[in-house]
Length: 333
Image (tube, rainbow, N blue to C red; front, side):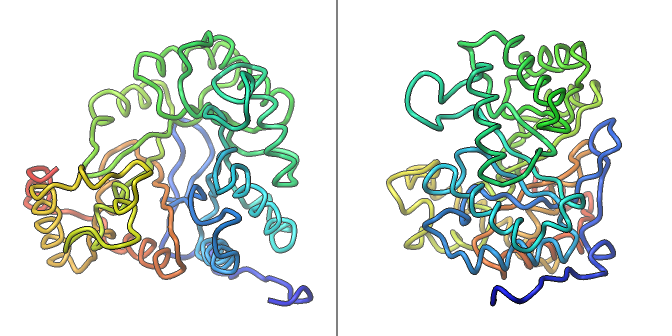
């Protein structure tokens, strides 16, 4: 695309498949599918494909773009690259976007570049705003619970980012249930209620159904899930073993070859059979399944290509499950 070409978004973008849910007890609506920029938006990735995905997402009603300070390779590059796209193509549409970022994991060397301290969180958000060339984020998360920092300090820092105008809402991610409950209380007392809790949720990872979702609902907190495809396991990628260049084929990362046992591959194959009967791919069924649970306001997808993003959005065309389908899926989860 030439520098002189102006991007004009689809005028029908809010009348597409996506749909929106109110986030918890707030007035903020989130698209059912949000686009995550953890992978595929760094300096080592295809910049043209990344831009195509952002534009296609926005053209199809995806308004929420989920980042963190350390997303991309190298750290910070996803925010930097997203910021360039914002400035060049989306500056007129900032008020139609929900942009979230997080801090909590290692970002820079030394004792002030990791954890949940006030020093780290506020410094990190300042850096994120500079990288993205924006005045505020819509949601700022504590990316993880830090046992070495008093929760009052971490939540106090989150609250102050709202009071300083650097964030509109705050959230937590991957917190133990009892600490999440304490965080909700502190934030409410600080006058900045927790908007949202972000955690892992998929057919293969259902722990949040026991306590996380009920506690969030009780406190008026929304929920957004990530890793709905279980690092790609819930897709056709592993139906015939471990392909080269897949996540599990590498010695690094969260998904290891040792995790993909024969019994797991059998389950994936049976789930794929159910998806085929529903007229969906396994990935589409896995995404659609997440929306059955009350309190799941949005699901973050991380796509490496425009085609993957299109396929993910099409999952929303069939989100109804029969009793029999749910029973079979539960037996395999």
